[in-house]
Length: 298
Length: 241
Image (cartoon, rainbow over all chains, first blue to last red; front, side):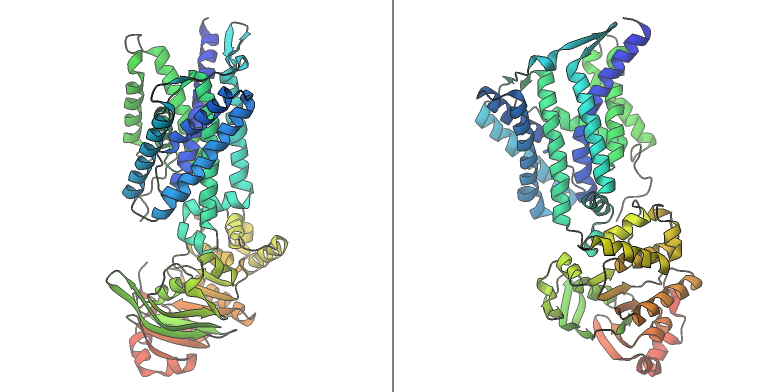
């Protein structure tokens, strides 16, 4: 494989991994936009959904049903997280909220270790997900194509939701000015719950795709995705939805680019190089690509 | 009717309201006057359910506001147009107005009201698809008032609508306030622009460091020598933004 085909192949890889980061980053960005909370426990929603799906697969249910149940479980877990952990401390200092998100992470991960053993378990995905489609000299993994298509559909649906529906517009209003939103009679509890539900649903979808890709799951599997999603949101501009999506695809592109360009002795340190580029970017645009250049809100 | 009785409010060590008793009867335009930090905005925040007084009672048409959530209070028709406008800059003019009507069930009538807002402020109609952040200060104030009107206020609370505006804009805003009052909207107006406020108000209260110093009709307050001395003899619009 040479020239244009190699580039196309790598582009598909980049868009595929960027799609997963984008779906994760949206959940972080929506919650941060309204609450100024960086919800690191967002990654554990991937784990919750994947374990529920695996449990149902082991019980003999069809993969599609198990996957749907897993996504539902992630969504419910996200809603519970908001209700039990974050609502009681709403309005507290940002550091207090950040620490609470770490506590939720530690709680969920240790609960999973107790319930499911700390070691990883194989995640059996149906053969269709691992099929390879040969198109000319290109070899396309069906999972990559599915990830790209799913992300495209969900991003389009999200765009329509935040621009056309009243709850969606309320969400953007609340992210801009929570006090003014309350004075207009926007039900802030409902809007925040909706933000958690949407973000957690997307995390559940990522969980299924990620687990099928990696082929195994473990209680700490949410750490890497949430870290990548956080980096993506910072690149794009923390709290901005379009920023999070752009940042995610930039991050996916950088990773694949460095994977191809770095000498093989250095590829294990790929992420270190990615972060060096990120630091350089933030030196020039401290608020990310789409972040406002204004000073922080008081 | 809005009635506040001996309302006490503190933020930490700051005693913002000390036994405030005021009332606004249906159809009245009542103004709250006073210097910065006198407690005017705190009164509005307490009525809206954003801050909770430690003592005293607040009621609107018999509903205890101290026990109502901020969106219950909006449902009662008590609408607060906050200081500094606080429009949603990333949302379009039209979306801002839609957010004003968020608690209403009659979305079709809300469209008619949007046309009314556009007739009141034609410039908003011309810029309906522009984002709020691109409007001038005066246009943003129009949008903030329009957004509040979309909620179908029975009691409209305006917090310093003329603040930081050019004299011609101040005149336009007060013209609209007068027109709304004539249409029967009950208005509670917080102002530093004492002369203009007393010209349109039926009654007013003068606040000094969290207490009501004087209350009376517009003419009584204008005729009061102490108010004359404190507010009217010096330029009233000196407050910087």
